[in-house]
Length: 283
Ligand SMILES: [Zn+2]
Ligand SMILES: [Zn+2]
Image 1 (cartoon, protein in one colour):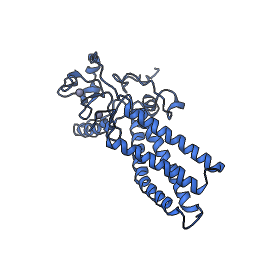
Image 2 (cartoon, helix red, strand yellow):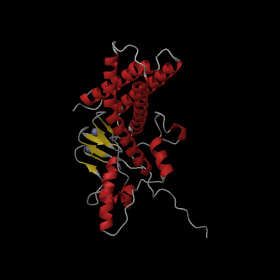
Image 3 (cartoon, protein in one colour):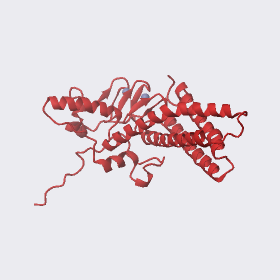
Image 4 (tube, protein in one colour):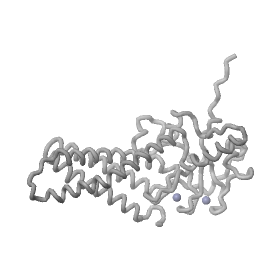
């Protein structure tokens, strides 16, 4: 496994798959079905090229951007540590401390064995980007998955259209090789589309609850422990659906699905449901 930011076999496989699907969709499927010289063909080719370029660009950022480091000056907020919200995250009542890195861990930070360091608001380590998905690259990772799902469905439509409606120009010409390319492309696209759609749905579910993948698994355990003790477990960072969306995708609703960096805090401290003032009765 290479260090984050390095080209690894899974990254090269992703780039090769994007390249192959792009080439076959535009230069075989669209060219056979609509023709690249027609208005419909050129428009579809241009739209798919833009989507593919957006995929590659957001993928490159997700691979290269640091997911978030704990600054050397970080000191835990003692008042914060007193909060019962963090009880569940502390072992034996101590502040969260990383023995391997030799520093305190901010809330939601975890030590990644693959990256060999602590990552702020760590979601998971992804081998397909050879990087952790954390506070700094979560949104761009999510936008990449969104673009990739859209591109997969778009490619499927063009491939199926080409397979069903293209008129064979000459039965004895090179149609066999283009048919083979289209079949291979379809075989790559089916599992890819399914996997990306499931991943996209999973992250929408997590964003709506303001959870990371790690927190989802911790929450399952915490809920079980709380139920055993006759209590109810609440995820401390769940602020309500709209606030959760803002805290992950940014304050501007029009930029939620755009690959722009967002002002979602420094990754060291997060608003919790206890920070939201409760409405008090006026009497
Ligand atoms: Zn660590
Ligand atoms: Zn990692």
